[in-house]
Structures are given as structure tokens and as C-alpha cells.
Image (tube, rainbow, N blue to C red; front, side):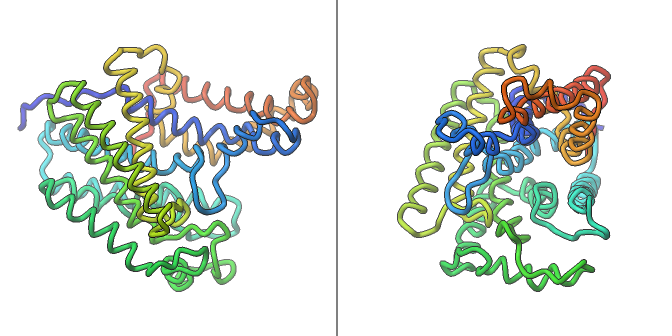
Length: 366
């Protein structure tokens, strides 16, 4: 059995993951609706914009949730592999676990998406299923030499872009046509025609590119370099990715569209992921500001539980608050701000559940 030491867990990754999940849970604050109810407020308009997805081309803070979650899956993979190898697991065992995890993520995503439907709602464009579809391939890629990894990334970006042949319009592209065939192979309430948001199953292919960028970052975090060297690599990578992604969009070569995960989106959103990773790594692991990010760590160490809570308990908590407290306590600043206070109370309860789990070392793992 291997006697190599267990890799140290980086708190900065948990904090970054916690921020990502907090942004998702914070949808209960309804900033976009409040901005509509109070027109003319620059601050509310700003908050509303960044808590909603852009209609097609461009980027808001909310659009960075899914790429960040996917990116962090890649960052965590080298640590997971090292941990399991340290326990003496063989490559066969590692492979079985990786593909088992991928299948679990896909099935969990379908289960959550089916809530509120009279039958299983087969869809594969949400965060968990997209990661699940690509995770097995990411694992295999993580076992290959770095040169091969870069070649695969280039093939994904160039090949996926070429397959679209410059047709990036909503519901009239390769991925949309694929879903019109693929999704109708499953039992459905009614025939699938199009996704209202333009999201597509095949986006898991470029999402794999996002996860690979995370795999690259995870390798840097484990390569024994000094923190200062790592920060320089992260910042340079962020700059290159942001500029290249933005240029592809500005020049009309490939628009920056999250909904179909265009190659330029992989680069642009990947650049922002490196920015966030740099900030958290510097703040937590270099400067040692662990107490400052503790509320985020509570969420980040139980990200799957947080994801499930957002699907299973938000509506239950929202209704319970109104049932037992009424509307008056949440409307003290006016009816327009009632959703904000009601959402803040819901968010506090959700965090309290995760804190209770954290204190008792109850972590949901896949």
C-alpha cells in the first residue's frame, strides 16, 4: 500500500466554491424583480442585472456560476486522484469510481429537474448533468501527459466551433438540432421542439474544456511552486483567456454565449474563473484570512447538499415563513422590498442548515 502523504485541502477552493453556491442560493433575494418595482435606481438595476442571465451574448455575474462550478470540479480532480492513490487504490478502482460518480451526477440532475413534472423529465443541460456527461472524460484526460491534454483542449474548441459553421443563433444551431432528435428518444409529456433558454445537451463538450482549465489550475496548485509563482501563473492565464475570449467575440469570429457554451465563452469565462481563484488563493492561502471566508466555507464544503437544498427546500421554507409570520415583517421597508427581506430570511435558514451540517461533520459526497 502507498505510504505517500495525503494532499492538504486548500481552504481557498472551498471558499470559492462557497461563493458560487451562495450566488445560486441568493436567487431567493429576487433583485431583478425589486429593480423592476423600483425603476430609476442604478444600484438595484446593477444588482438585478448580475442576478440574472443575459439574454444571449455577453456575461453577468450570474452567468459565471455554472462555469465556476465546472472549473472547480477540474481543480479538485488532481487532489482527489492524489488522495485516492495515497490510500492504495488502483487505476481500475479510480476509473470505476470516476464513471460511477459521473452517472450519479447525471441521474441526480435528472431527478431534480423532474420535480413538479408528472413523469421523469429527461433533460441534460443543467449544471450537474453537464458535469456528469464530461466527468469520465475529464478523469481519463487527467491521466494523460500535459501535451496530450492541450491537444485535446484545442480539438474541443476548434472542432466544436467548426461544427457550428458560424451558426450561433438560438434554436437554429447544431446543438439545437441534435436535441430535437436526441431528447425525443426518451418518454416525454410532449414532443421536444426547442429549449426556451437555448440551452443544449452538447454543451457538455465545451464544458469539458472549462473543466480542463480547472484541471490545469489544480496541477499548478500541486506542482510545488512558491505561492508567488502560482499567483503569477494564474494572473497571466486569466489575462490571456479574458483577452482572447473577448477578441473572438468582438471580431465576430465566435460570440461569447454562455447558453450554448461557445468556444469563446470557454475562454472568457475561464479567465474570470482564474481571477476568482487568484483572489481566493491570495486572500486565504497566502494571507491566511480564514475567518473572513468561514461563512463561504460552510457552504463550499457541502456544495452538493447546498445544490439539493436549492431544489428541495427553498419553496418549503418560503411558504413556511409566510404561513407562520405573515407578510408584515417583510414589508417594513415597503411592498417593493418585501421579496428582499423574505429572501434574506430564507437564505439565512438555508445557511443555518448547512452550518448545522458543518458543525456535525455531515457532508454529502458523490
